[in-house]
Length: 322
Image (cartoon, rainbow, N blue to C red):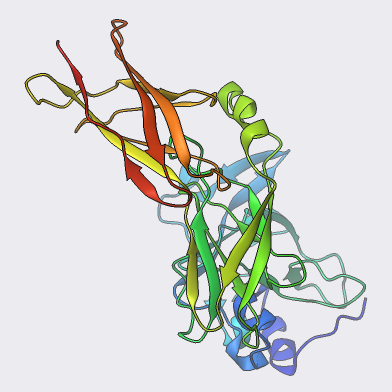
């Protein structure tokens, strides 16, 4: 197989057992020069163990001091030498500071091509080796002139809708993936002008609890009339209601159940008695009924708690005689 490569790589792979090529998706998508597309921040590429008979055996189980760390080269390329690798299947892990997690990859060394035994990661397609693009996390150091749309996408209890994706069709350069903390970021071309856009949302289809499954029908697939401004970072916050659960003596109540009529999921008060309830991105201004219940069955109902679209409002304190 003939593989298209950069010249520096030809010299690199003559000494490498495994070569890994990574690129910064933001730099690539905003058409930065090729020599400026290497990942930013701390990046670790290493072999963590071997796959034998379909089972993964980490190196540390045999030798706590065994580490096979890749050497970093220019343009986002990393190499692992063959000195400690015998033919077999190995697990390659990539850990970064500013990018979405990359799933570990099981790769077989050598490549199977006697003329070119170096194993290339990712696998070349039609003889062309392309880098693995790393998607920026919300805390990525975007340049000041970047046009961004940021936000959170959470279940009512405040946990992130991990695996959900957001995109502005034909406008945003990336598809944002929601993390476990609920945070996401979309970036746009530097030439992007001020605009009002529609954000498309896709929710995960598996790995959900029964409460989350019951909540999905109430969540929007699109959010219209979202403003973006050239050269600015604009927030798209969720509507949020927060409150406190206290005893009549003013002490915090932990673990009280908070439900809002019309929503399947609940949340609970924390150690300091505080709680937050997250509403869908399309939640309109209005009022909702909040039910606060203790484990013993005591309940207080707030029938007209005010909520405001994409803002955080406070519910009245809930007091129990305990």
